[in-house]
Figure (cartoon, rainbow, N blue to C red):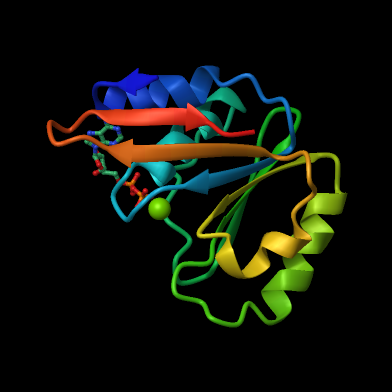
Length: 132
Ligand code: ADP
Ligand code: MG
């Protein structure tokens, strides 16, 4: 699926039909993963601004009926205690857990989770693919 602008990515996130509470986002730096999460947050009724959790690794937001827990494991070679934190949050069915840069914690994710792949095109558009 082609996403032509930042606004379209926000709308895609907002209208995304959540099939699994665990969503893994794959794509290079600047692909639009966090932009997708900003849209998703709107769809969950979260008005707070979503910022990239690169330094804190995770950020939580309370939505209307579900919480959004947003992880970013970028350049984190050893997730340490955050791996346990992630496992705990995955267990809680009230959480929608979204993960950027999941390489080091892949074994924690349930087999049937949603995987979204985002690729740049040269013209600022993005190619979004649902891998699972
Ligand atoms: P990531 O989390 O994947 O590193 P971000 O969502 O933080 O990426 O950043 C994506 C950047 O690209 C934002 O500045 C956004 O405005 C810009 N952008 C431009 N076109 C698009 C598009 N079609 N989809 C998503 N983001 C886009
Ligand atoms: Mg990001």
